[in-house]
Length: 305
Image (tube, rainbow, N blue to C red; front, side):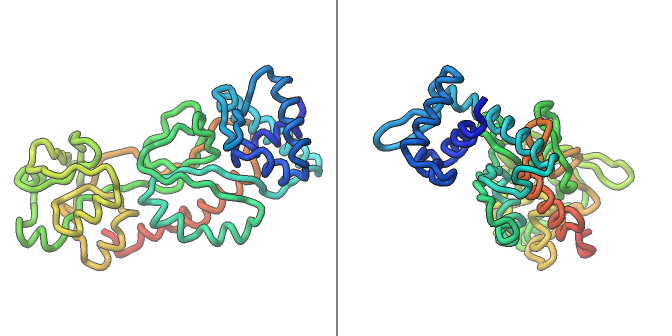
């Protein structure tokens, strides 16, 4: 299969512009269109839908895109192993991450990565909703969950320890729980859905954070909004330490039942579709995030108890 045609298709799919993809590869618009048509004839399907106003991926093109990327990654890796090809990171990297974590910890360090890798373009999708990596053609994702999808591989970025928090104003008005049973008399903020969350304490003690069995009048599906509401005095919530370490340090939030935390095996993972080789752009971005965020996470500082 013609790898030049594949490279043009991948660029055109990323840019949704055949002429722009051709220019990046040094091709005139007519040549780029002809080369793409040749690839489509070879695979027996229309990969892109063209109109006078826009270009869009066809259903067949969306299904073929991850395989095209895989072929190019394998080709580039093989050439690099022989001392040929392009060993440097290039191209567009599609990355998705939870919006709150990305705002706090990823976005501030992106200029350093872009300065170190001028030939890489980052296409970020930041949302607390988890996108499907394969269907969405993502190269890499950050997930704060258990790594259970057998179609994905990953490297652990950090533990994701989750603690109970409230504002001083809320505790002054409603009192401070001294035992997990006291939570039933408080306003508990639910996240996304109101399922009970198991807690574990010192010496293996167990308890439950259950908004349904308490005075709960607020359900939020966004981590940052939940933290803001907690700081404003809306109630007691469960938050990741990486989200609230600043507020704990400056006193705008206080740990509630500090001997307890959420019983979970979740962690922060960098995950990517299973493949025999990682492209240079994915490898350098993943190494960058691990180096800047994993070695000594700022949210695990000694002031956090």
